[in-house]
Every structure is written in structure tokens, then in C-alpha cells.
Length: 92
Picture (spheres, rainbow, N blue to C red):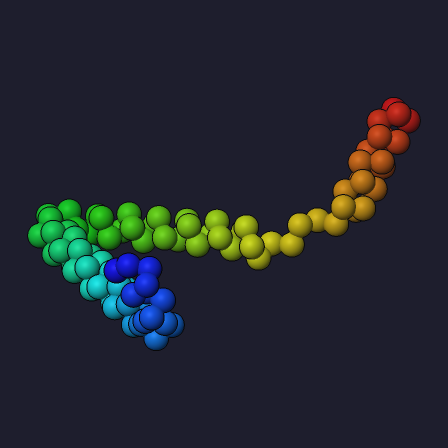
């Protein structure tokens, strides 16, 4: 497509092309994923693979929750604890 054709098509043509490209990408990804699943189901150790995958997903979920859900300690609270620890160490 040349630049002149792209300009004449406008936003409608771009939107249609983007949706078509996204649909093609989705179909190819799903097809690839189904092929992978079929291959895994033929394996004799499928139960072990599923258990490992579950363990991996649980670990990843735990990491995500720890990263985003945990509230970091207050900065001033940390400084106060360090000051108290230094005073206690100096007194000893």
C-alpha cells in the first residue's frame, strides 16, 4: 500500500486492517496452542507436567501478590527503628 492510498483510506480502512490483523494473529496463536496441548496430552507424563505447571502458576501468583499487594513499611518507621537500635548498641 502506498502512502497516497493509505491517506485516502482514512481511519476506517486502518481500523478494518488492524482488526483483521489482530484476528489473524489470534487464530494463529490459538491454533499453535491447540497443537501444543494435543502434543502434551499424548505424553505419558502428562499428570506430572500438569502438577508442575500448577506449582509454577501458584509460585508466580504468590510473587505477583507479594510484589503488588504488600504495603512497604513506612520510611520514617524504618528510620526510627534504626535510631533505636543505634542507641541501644551505644548504651551496651
